[in-house]
Length: 504
Image (cartoon, rainbow, N blue to C red):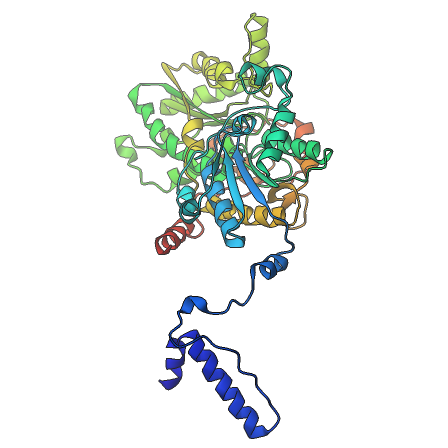
């Protein structure tokens, strides 16, 4: 009990005891001379205890004395990772060096062009963990393409004669930013990389480290983009309610349109998550509560061509058997055909700042509903879109773990001056988590339709996979496996985060 009392002593007493013991031992052996350090007086406060390392030494241990200023922005559409990524980045920088100043540009590149930002305060740093439990982007998003001068001018983001890229670069220099974290898709991150190159030619060193945000999971060479897992789970949850509408009318056709412009991963993963949950439920067939009526009867994605006539015949037989049809379709499926039809009719196809067709205007879900309804004898048709519901959710436990890992790697890369987009690199042996070079970042990565779970699902629902795929697009992936689709949490990360937050 006497030894335990040492640990309750003030620091100056512990130092004194240690010095006396060492001196006693040295005297007994006759070989040790101890110089006792000058100690504070007994009445002095603990705050006057000597520091082990001064500020200069601390910075030198961290790899240099360069003073960093970090900026964060989110851009593009929403995904279940934006607020969480901001929160984790703030937490990681605070742990690394709380003296590093952090600002957040409001509304993405729009805020950068307008010079609008929020300075992260000491109190914000303490409470940043709150952001990890919310969806959306706390600092706001926008769709701005810096190279689209006409669009920026039209929206009042720049003045006549100004180059948006130069305006953005000048603002970064004015704000003294040395590290820029962009949380967005391929367009967002490559735009930031172009900014860094532009500044480099003008002797200004800016390190850009992006985080891959897209629920489509279609960014080369990132194995799994942030928020994709959650979006699939939330899309399944959405349809678990909508599917009950099949009982509102005889011979009902329900079309579930899922986001995914070029990639069918989200549609396929959402269907799998939904079906896995459905199989775990109890049914009462004798009173009409049947699994086959709630099941998915067709999955249509951009990577597979669709034989409307053949599929209509198959679905009509299913309709005659059970009395309703449920199909899942990617918003990008059949878009080229729909656009050709619209243009042939003289209709204008609205496009965003990046030149992408606005899919709300193209409306693939309605197109396929119209194509199938008459052929299968549907008395009523319903098209439901889960996109906004799914993408605005807060991240699930799997995504929280991924976001936190990526945020830590992003801070590490930034402090080492290594730019890129952080993610599990598909072109490495073990899917290494690293900052992937910007020149390798590209959108439009297709879903690998050779995935065993996907082929098994199509067989299970009775849908024949068309062998005439977009082979050229699929081969670009070298048939590498997509990230596994899981329907339940692997570890209660959210609970641990809440416990840490409560202690803080």
